[in-house]
Length: 78
Image 1 (tube, helix red, strand yellow):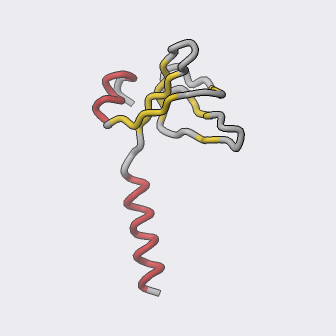
Image 2: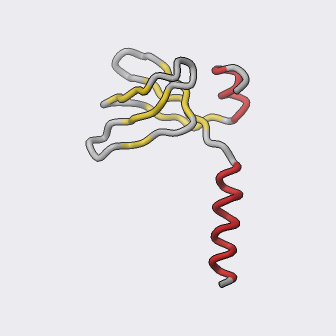
């Protein structure tokens, strides 16, 4: 029972720590910012762009993890 409580506590704490990403299309050099990237079985990256709120799917992408400060500087206050 304690183990389950510990796992749940870690999940809650982990959810509080945000993840921030810069996703670049290597073909067009377009840059997107997002808080969540889904990798598909095909290798495609699917996410919602923080600037435009558009859903984006890229067959080829470079995903970089950012700090909260870097993300906010690029996107603005969220």
